[in-house]
Image (cartoon, rainbow, N blue to C red; front, top):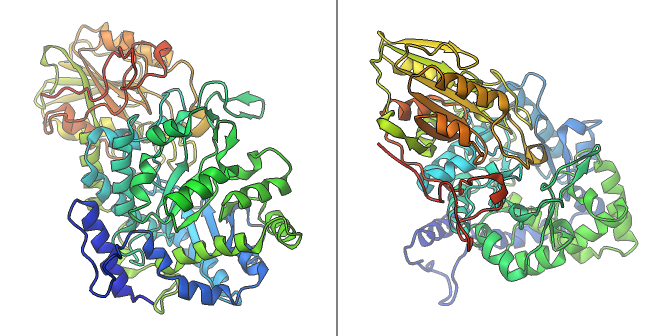
Length: 624
């Protein structure tokens, strides 16, 4: 059995290899033995098999069951059902949403798990997809679309490291990140979760996130288990194949991706080709289908490709109630998914039914014990690698992380990410940078003083929200801080009142959304926002438009009415990064990671199209 010191050495060697240095062979390894990231997990198999041999069927099924803490009808169910995992879904928070209550909640649940016969700790998951943004006061980083525009994987790795630290401060040890989707149609509501429309950049950035979250020692109390998602082709769904919920049809989300296997690999698998060899511990299959078969039901995808071909030795975790969408009744859904290769199932509110039904399926012979043992072995491998069985492991948060949430040093990195993510699309007459000593600057628009709008979805709540929902600096506040004492900053809501100012900054864009609720066949600026830009332009002073959005929008009138136009994406909590660029403290360096279309009729439009004729091409971005 390998020691922790030796395991750390192996993973360090891996990281060096991934950076281009030749891998070294450990002193006692055979001549043909080359350590890989996935060998970190199989190295624990002796310990795993010893524990596995002690487990009853019920204890094994419990390890395969993940419930949302919000739907626990009794906290003792953690012990009674031997639950292997809990999660906080979007908005599934303790009542106060304070960091102290987060920590106390997770520690309480962990202690319940430790009361079971074998004392197997929980893996506890959360969607910290742009910082630990469920938690009030955490740093909110730009969404992935903005990070893709930075072209800076070192920065993205540091963002992931900080996110891991803030997640661990609340007692949580598993982050459902990175998204390595390759969005190919911007009308999809999850476009902002993708780094780029091009596979290579997605693979590079996804790898950086895994390195930042997991580090070189997964048992480090400041690191978390990562999860590459959503396998596979979620960014390739076509219009009209999405889901219908409560009578409303969403045209793209959870839809079908009709591609040959060669095309699926070439476009949508790069993020797995990079993260699996680097040791990503978990992978989440997609809600979407590939050629009409749900990913959660595809043995070809889950077993033959991920596990057998790509050598993935961690475990697969289904998306939120995703198996419910497999055709058939609930019992057949479970059998189909588990037999296809799913290892742990996210059953937020049906954990009791899932537990009982899976047990029946095994007892009836519909699911072989070999499949159950394989799933549990994979789950336990990750728990061992994450240090949950170490002698000094405790459900309590490491004291070194006590003051990390929202730390000034973390906000400084977020500010850097914001300024590097901004893409300058237009700058007629050298309107930008603005003069800090100007007599008056007028600031207007719904996004000017709204931390919720600039943060977008997956912030405090699943869908996000408008208003002062968390701590941070709005763009208006940042402008006020940036200008000289002699400069007057005036404001309005509707774009009026700019007459006589040296310039007017207009902040407009999309309202917060997540997942299917962002599916949009028009991609136009809201009419009330278009009117704000028109009102500002009517003042006759130079107009600087800052667009907050989760994807390129069709904005011909606003673009024409503006002297300067900045795509700010969803920058998060640190509006100071926007002011840094507007006033020239940082010359813009961001480059489009998504093509900007002339009209919505051009969607889907991507860099490698044969008839490529965008308004702004992939990679476009001006500077000063």
